[in-house]
Length: 209
Image 1 (cartoon, rainbow, N blue to C red):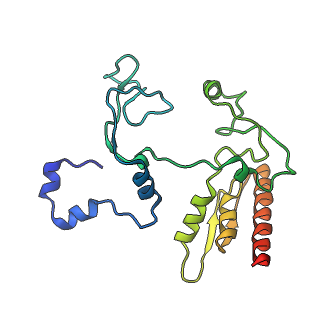
Image 2: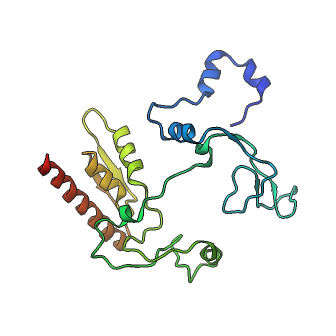
Image 3: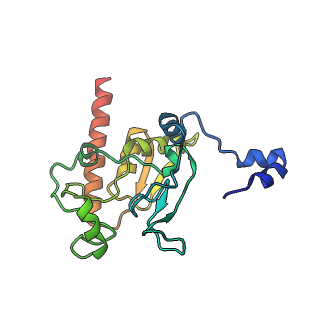
């Protein structure tokens, strides 16, 4: 929501305080902005449809100019770009060594049957992987969320769309109880293998210490 300066100045101090963004000490958005610093979006910079933030976006509109039109020209840190780290190959495939290597699936369709994916495949090559889930979440992020949501009695983490099981691994690592549901049999096998490996590593760590 955007509020002009005149309206903001007319608000009470209580309302102004509600509009302020407040961060926890370990907030990942705050840490990311501290690392990147503040930058302005360049209104003269042209971006493709794969990177529409910060300047001009490739969109059809009445203000279209040479295939581009005015996009965001805001100011702030890197968190304004909705940045999320990717899981590394070693992280996503840990425990999947004995599983079949398969091509990744995007939007429920293979790249052979999706016209939209042909354009993407020309720019981004995706190699087959034992963990072929297309949106594997970063483990550190899920561990942070498991720690953040822990209640005085522990609480049970419920993931109704378990995917390849990163939330389950995070629960193992942070000592949380976990219930996961996944309708795709292939992803269930991947999740089981990854969570099993996480438990083995956790038990080995307990034995060492």
